Image 1: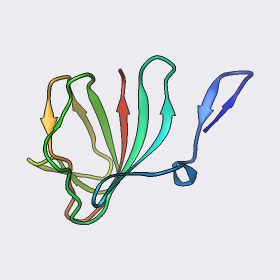
Image 2: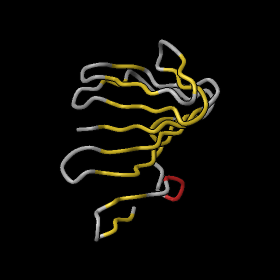
Image 3: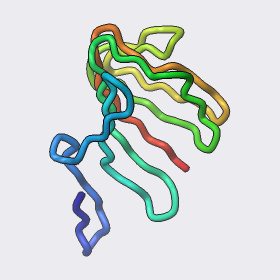
Image 4: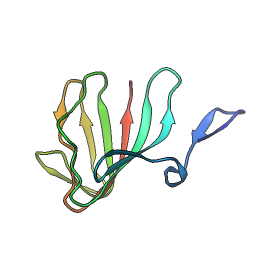
Length: 108
């Protein structure tokens, strides 16, 4: 991740950042972390990948943009181009039958 000192614009190419395996078939790449709160992550779910257990949003809401593929939250499918807001206290089970890439933002 790079930051230009003159204007404090942070930028990162997610494909060149370290990737963390969250669960089998699910990987996350951090692309931005705020100094006190907030972070942005790119999540790649391989075909058939599924979150183990329930993803509960206890400390922050979650903003999801489906970059490619089809994302399923355990209840419905969301195609590429879809924005989803999961409010504080909500939960879901991230997964994908066909594979997908998500941009995920945690405001706090």
